[in-house]
Image (cartoon, rainbow, N blue to C red; front, side):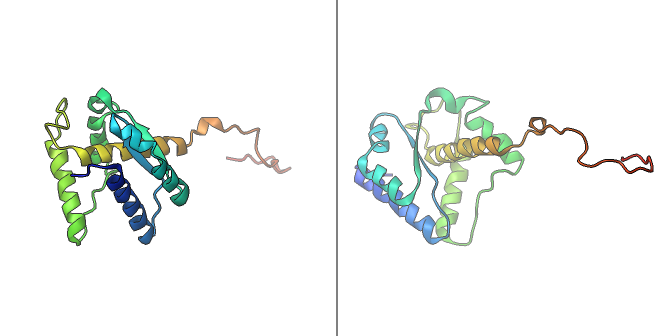
Length: 165
């Protein structure tokens, strides 16, 4: 909130990437809603230099009405919550608690067809962007056993005529 220039936003991005690195994690993707001025941000040379320096990828996202869709939008995350696939960290440090509390508040307040100018939903949208990426990656790692075929047994039965079960 309150960031008015690309330099400020890029500073926050770099700070977050470095903080993750200090905690033993890496940032693989930075998702930017590519509407109006953010489209310029996602293509800013300084951000592109950061992708080279830190190895993450910039993904542009165009939300439009998709966020309201029950199949692919914010409402579709409900099933992941019910399955326990989304876990909101609630650590002892005040910063994590503040962030978790704000996310929970925004999730509870979120309503379909309410514009971001009328209802604060930045953290809900950030979670949704991450959730979309997680689902894509999860699906790409899923194994479909019908893709495998076997040609008979890898051994021959013994001469005693016994059957293999």
